[in-house]
Amino acid sequence: GGFGQGSDSGSQMANVSNSSLRRCQAQGREEELRAKFKELDTSGDGVLDFQELSRFLRQERPDMSDKHVSLIFSKVDRKGLGRITFEDMVEYILSMELLEAKQGHRKATQLVAWDGPEQLKVNGSWDRETRLALQEFLAVQDTPTAKVVKPSQFVNGQMTSCHVIVLQEFLQLCGAPSALASPGQQGGGGQASLACGAWTDRTTRALHEVLLSEGAPTAVHLGEAFLQAKFGRNTVYALQEFLAMMRKSRGTALSVAR
Image (cartoon, rainbow, N blue to C red; front, side, top):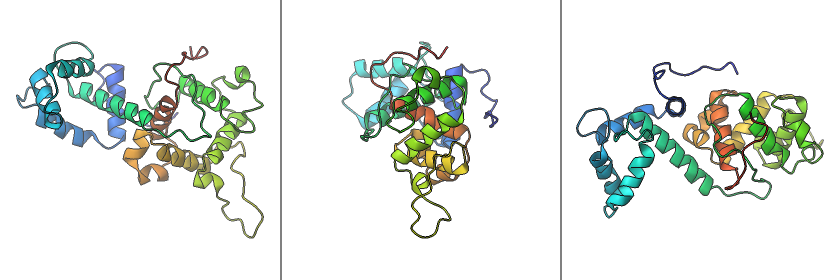
């Protein structure tokens, strides 16, 4: 896609941290989280040590054991350096929010969980891997066109009118208001179908409505602004989060993703 690449200030970071920081910026939360990090960093050295994280965790749970604190510390300190950077904290918060969104996600009957990759990247990139994941998810949904496509041909990384139609049928199935609306239509002529095979602004709006209603964290944090936005990096963040939320708890990696 041709959307902005976000800030270059984090070019020294690892890819995961860099991606998480960009997602945090996309959600409009960097200032809030930096303020929280500064508040926790009582020594002022720019990183959190075990005692600083412990004090923070015990504000909420005073009875938390040292063993539990150590477990959380090791999860946040992904590099095993004995200290937690701001990027480490952001990565942990975003991953926990996504896990909570998945656990709290009320799976509507029309949504079918899929055997997605164990670690689906949430990096805002509309790349082949993301398109393959979307296609694999759409191929198992209960829409008229999805029922007749051959997965081996449908999951190919290209976005053709056939893929767009299945996506549009899926959005209608989910009850997205924009997918069900019939703009400019007078009288009782029935509803105009969204499933035209062309990716229109209406398609993007319907996709944003579904991602917000299903609780994708980026969509939830942006709220109404997300509904009004055009297709871009934030769409892809929320879509990747949604695909991760819909993944079966135990599933095999995409065989065609490489």
